Amino acid sequence: MKVYPSKIFLPKKKQLAWKIAEIASDNAKLNKNAIEMAINRIIDNASVAIASLNRKPVVTSREMTLKHQRKNGAQLFGVSNKLKFDCEWAAWSNGTAVRELDFHDTFLAADYSHPGDNIPPLLSVAQQNKKSGMDLLRGIITAYEVQVNLVKGICLHKHKVDHIAHLGPSVAAGLGSMLKLNTETIYQAIQQALHTTISTRQSRKGEISSWKAYAPAHAGKLAIEAVDRVMRGEGSPSPIYEGEDSVIARILDGKKAIYSVPLPKKGEIKKAILETYTKEYSAEYQSQALIDLAKKLRKKIQNLNQIKKIDIYTSHHTHYVIGTGANDPQKMDPNASRETLDHSIMYIFAVALEDGNWHHIKSYTKTRAKKKSTIKIWRSIKTHEDKKWTKKYHDPDPKKKSFGAKVIITMKNGKKIIEQQDKADAHPYGSRPFKRKNYIDKFLTLTNDILDKKESKRFLKTVQSLKKIKSGQLNKLNIEVKKSKLKRNLKKGIF
Image 1 (cartoon, rainbow, N blue to C red):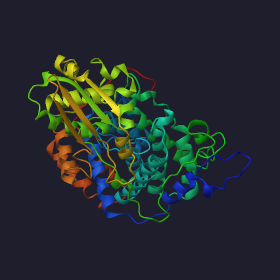
Image 2 (cartoon, rainbow, N blue to C red):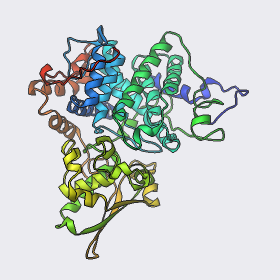
Image 3 (tube, rainbow, N blue to C red):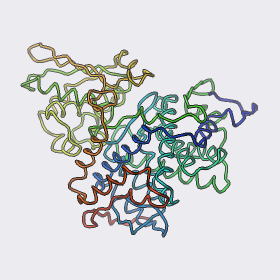
Image 4 (cartoon, rainbow, N blue to C red):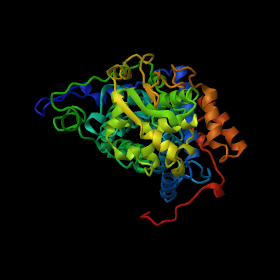
């Protein structure tokens, strides 16, 4: 894939957006393992969404959606099934709930992604359009396929473009697959979705705000609207990737760039979802293996006060995004926001080492961040890029791909404690990969004080039978919470 000047006509069939649209409309057979993993990820999303229902960004997004009710719409997490909403607004709020805790799935390659962000917009549209469980599964598996392969082939971060620019096209492709749209319609939708979801990475830089939670939900909402427009006959900027003034030429590597996106062949079974991985801990994915490593190191160090310094040797991405290579003073600031702290490996490693554990709420409290002993360890940590770890980070073989690090702890007496870990324990190729039981346990842990046991049991039984859910019955995937347990934000807005 490369840039073509306007004077050279590039046929649709040679454009990336068309090739994506072809696999989205090919109606290929679904892989059994991919189906089961999609169900796992719906459970995973529900876990973190329910756990975040009363966090400020989610409350605000819910208040906005409550103003957009419709008779035959989509469901809203936590809210009674008797109420239905415009699907794009349900997707907005549900997507924010899924993303808020930074605790769902991930895929890392040339760029970053949280492919579980595809599920809320797909589910909302499926509910409003009375689709079946198999329709939804087809859409999810297609969306994962597209996002994973875009992330393998195109680095957005290099140009400080936020990774939701890959999410817009993947949601559009998934919706097209789920709704059984033709190739031309999906092609136009993918282009519109990409064009409208390009934004900068300032949302993940400096003092990280609540927009980090809203960003993927916004991309999903925009993708829904793009699909709606093209279904009504509207077109898109084209060719969106290869055009003279389009994405590659003006935003990415420029007019001489060549990119390769490894899409499956038309009709080939889609299995990219099986290459993705969820989080055991509520923190940026590149910190998962380091949390596991810190927990193990805690058992070896009796007196943490004797630590002189800690050096972490890791990949380019880890060092420059969540390490000291980012040159963000906020990553060392006890007064930083939760969103900033979960992108500081120095903070995360210090807390995990001191506590020998990690908790999605307790590990981020203001009191926890301001603990003197924690700050002492925190500020003794420095990260370094090691080309060996960078190479492992980018290994195309999923079994060899690594997001870990080597840690050297230097004690005051000069003794050095050296440990390393390639993958998080819960990674598909880790020491104890997440299985269905782990996803269910995560759901039960995160929703324990929020859901009634009856509702919890009902949801888990329903979602595991997703293949059998008939058209118009996907409202069963919604989870209701007692109204008294839902916080409100009564500040007046426009709606």
